[in-house]
Image 1 (cartoon, rainbow, N blue to C red):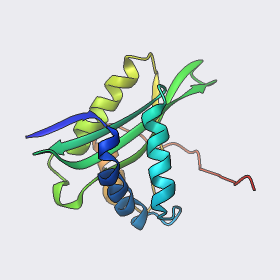
Image 2: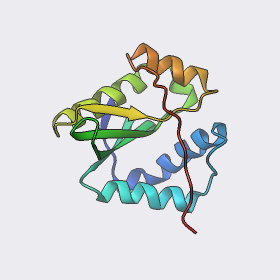
Image 3: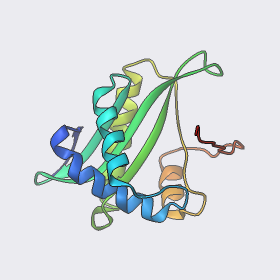
Image 4: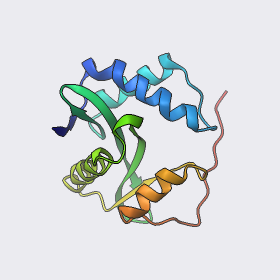
Length: 148
């Protein structure tokens, strides 16, 4: 049976492996297990963040995270959704939908009015998944820079 719950420190090894699979298909990110583990730990410790796992038979098969940010456009809180990934052998079984619903419920309980995410423009299966959930594309593009 597939269930969704808050992630725990004991899940970090499984989550790092899921991120490895995700980052392998996203050209904008590099696999660096130490950085990914540190980021996951920070999410676990932050009360404005939610890190969820999907599991079956005590095995983690998916994850997603969200972080509350302040939106001037909304005049309140928005949730930045990141790291939505399901083990390839469990895709299409509802884990992604369950994770996203649980994340939305967590956000709604905190008066968040909008969820937003970035997706690789070439990851058609992911874009189709979000579309089926009712997500809409915007005209915004993502820019970034690093502080050195």
